[in-house]
Length: 165
Image 1 (cartoon, one colour):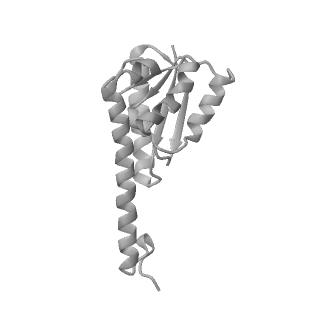
Image 2 (cartoon, helix red, strand yellow):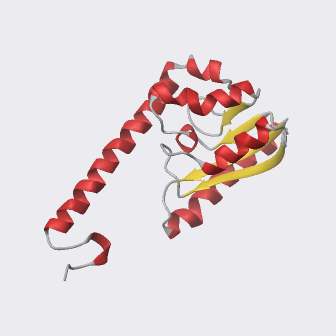
Image 3 (cartoon, helix red, strand yellow):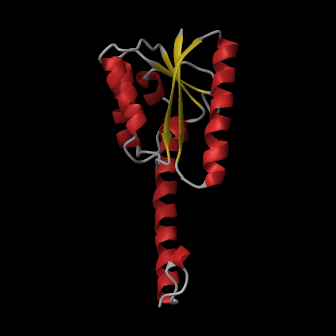
């Protein structure tokens, strides 16, 4: 089977740049080797939230749909690296894979090591709830960060810029 490794991390801070992609790549390549699959490409969305449009994933979609690359499976460290959308939106991320006959395999999590089609994934209520929980986590995190920044501003500080003049 021809596999593509997909990596995503959401922050542009140095520690995450240095560690997250390398960690994800290590686990993905290890699973691909254990399964005896052929790694044909690696794709990374760097400093991109799981709830945002992912340019590298979109480019991979274009290549697959235009038959520039033949892929049987997309291997991802865990579901939250692939998407953090609401339950109703997860199908948008997975739909094109189903049409292209590309399965997804997560290294970690509930369905670790299994080849999944969108149909199979969509029947797994726990997986759908996990995806929705990831989306809710992002929503709450955004609200907390915004509140913290607002408090700093009201205290005379502009966040990471220091004191206001």
